[in-house]
Image 1 (cartoon, rainbow, N blue to C red):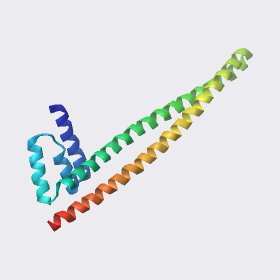
Image 2: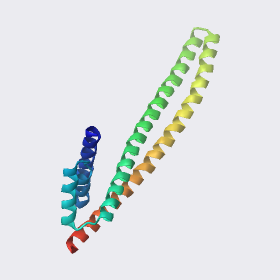
Image 3: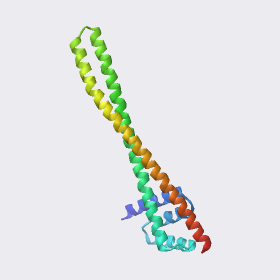
Image 4: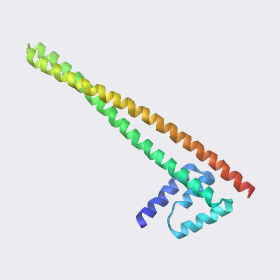
Length: 168
């Protein structure tokens, strides 16, 4: 439909603009779903001497890179969420210690014991949140390495397209 076609053209233009070079041009032009865009893309590809197989490979690589970048953003959001949860739990943990201390100063051992018992529960939750944050951080690092690898493949593909275009 018109909305998804517009999104595809915008996405292709963004990816094409970010990548630059023949690969970026190819993807920026080839992402639209209208006949006019397809015809224009085919003309540009013909000028570069690219065949259908190369074009399909470029589009697959672009989609893979786009998916990896989206996964990176989602993982970064998840990492931030786990970081904030761990911080909130740590603040609660420390606050309960302070409340227990204050209760003891008022000679209210029962309240102090209650605060310390709650502190133990919050401490376990905090430890789990810190572990979840560590895992989220490691996941982000892995995904970012994958994105960098894919960007390297795009650069290699771009060089291949340039060599092909020069030989054509």
